Length: 115
Image 1 (tube, one colour):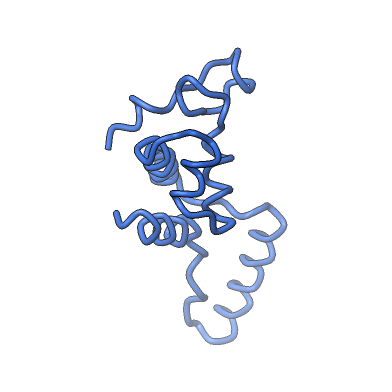
Image 2 (cartoon, rainbow, N blue to C red):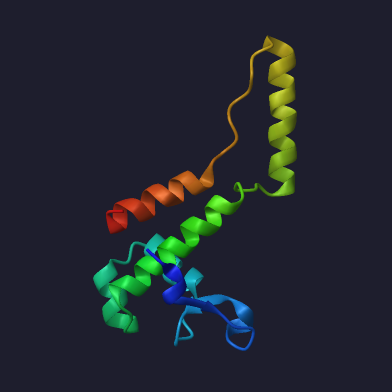
């Protein structure tokens, strides 16, 4: 899907957040509805957007998530690194892999929209 046809970012609209073109509906707002369990039909009915616009929000998010790995907050990352180092010293075995949050998001979006 070419999300560029449906998503725009203009500093004059919502301080430059990506929105559905021609609206003030932010991509993050639509994704938040999906995360809360809203069905596509509910979103289209309540906010007068098309299914293609909703899918464009998901495609935009997927592309952005693929640009750079998910980052943990500094405190969580420091704690995880300390835990890994202590395990590695104790057993010489590698610690658990870093959390890949974007895989969970991709799975949820893919399931929801049958991508």
